[in-house]
Image (tube, rainbow, N blue to C red; front, side, top):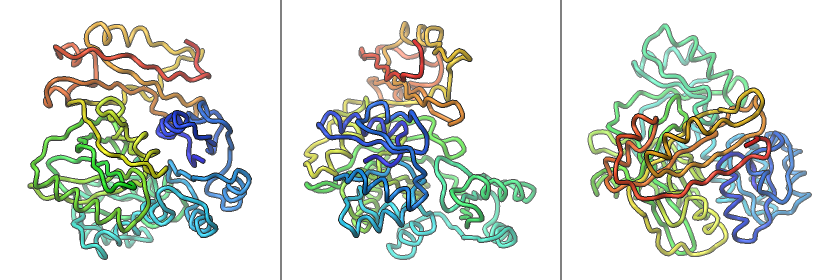
Amino acid sequence: MLLGSGELGKEIAIECQRMGIEVIAVDRYANAPAMHVSHRQHIIDMLNPEELERCVILEQPNFIVPEIESIDTRTLIKLEKKGYCIVPSAYAVHTTMNRKLIRNLTSEILDIPTSQCKFSKNYEETKRHIRNLGYPCIIKPIMSSSGKGQSFIKNESEIDIAWEKSQKHGRVKNQEVIIEKYIPFDFEFTLLAINSVDGMHFCLPIGHFQENGDYKESWQPQEMNNNSLEQAKNISKKIIYRLGGYGVFGVEFFSYKEKIIFSEISPRPHDTGMVTLISQDLSEFELHVRAFLGMPINKINQYGPSSSVVLFDCFANSNNRLELEEFLDPMTNTISTNFILLGIGIPQVRCREMHQSGRCNTKLMAKYLYIHNLHAQQLLDLPQLSMVIHDNPSLIF
């Protein structure tokens, strides 16, 4: 049972289908991406404990796989105690979906380097903490996803708007916020760690760019020295072994003057890991499914420097007809590229519809294999790749 049936959930569902696993897609709206490739669907409010528990008891799934943050995690803890298998574990899901809980675990209990931060329950306390931490700083709700409610504050005049945004776009009303001192990092990266029956495995580090907390671009591998990479692996192991469970964990880090600073962790495939659909023989989605099924991972083979980018949020016209030709023709005539269309069938839900991925022969080129036609035309000697379109029945081609 997938709790959350968005773009990443769709890829998990596809991998489950390849394994012959019955897939039940659950989300708060109809026609979510994973529902296109599932056996059955349920539309419920996953923050409602009664609705969530009723759905699980009705279906009696062997595995419950959370794919989003907006879930009543206390219900998952309750269900796990009743014998249901939560992937990777109810404790992992509950802890990582709350920035205060995961920061307490990593910074206070495990003594892992993190950014300097304070927590605040009201506006006046927030202003006081910001003055003490200094500018610039970042304010986020302790429970939110994809940058919702997050603000970068450069001076005192921006505090009011940032506070209102944190309260409006957090998962619950009147919730606590985290204020983090900004780190002028050299680069940020994600390390995909897979905890499985045959031990802990790691994909090559993934460099990425985010805008307002939302994923925009990623490339693999991110160049870094071996010492920094080993630091990141050791930190990941400490956290994951404490959280428990089999599956993929996306661990985000900052690299600052060759020091590795922990940022966040997701107990599921990560949006920056979309690049693994083209960069590896086993994508992060296949790795996740294999791990929670108790299958060994053995070895992960990386094909070469690769990159992925979100090209459009939504580009269907008013007649719901997808206009691909004008955009795709210059790209496909210039370089060999892989496209994946990840459709969400309702206009009021913000969606990240189109990804472009590619491989090339040098690490430097991989980082720039994205964005616009002008950039793409500057790349030469790329290997031939196939084009893949995952269609959406609500769109007309």
